[in-house]
Amino acid sequence: MTQKYKSPRLTLPAGERDHFEGPSDAPVVLVEYGDYQCPYCGAAYPIVKKIQKNLGKRLRFVFRNFPITNLHPQAQWAAETAEAAGAQGKFWELHDFLYEHQSSLGDEGFFARYERALKLDLAKLKDEVAQHVHLTRIEEDYMSGIRSGVNGTPTFFINGSRYDGYPEFGPLVSALEEAEKQST
Image: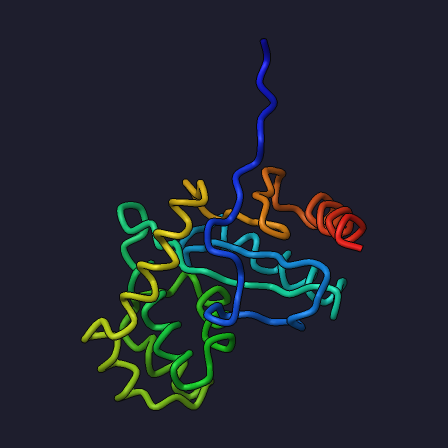
């Protein structure tokens, strides 16, 4: 007797607690569990941006933190920094900046570079990161990923089901468009 493999599902559905771009009524929701220091996430970043541009208002993109600290020593710091920027209304700006400057994460002067670029309250941001103010949020993201079957980054979910294909533009857009057809 053979068993049919069933793709893992999100245990924590995408919602208002999440960082998202795109309309709440979009027919397709793409959730990424990512690590700011992961080179594969860095490679997927411009692909996701291109997909967002391509699908426009038909897509809601959600990002959740999944720092793999045993491989990426700056991942936790980067996630906490993004969340601290989010508390100042600048999550997406810093999310993008971290991926665009991935090779210099943790370098001396990194804070000063993005302070000028993003116009953040740097003292508040540094204080929140040092005190781990947003650690609970990151742990919630991480544990929801574990419960959903995430075991590496990037891991994508489309309308709640894990996408097990390669994160290239063509295959990912095809999967998103198929999910859109199924949602209507």
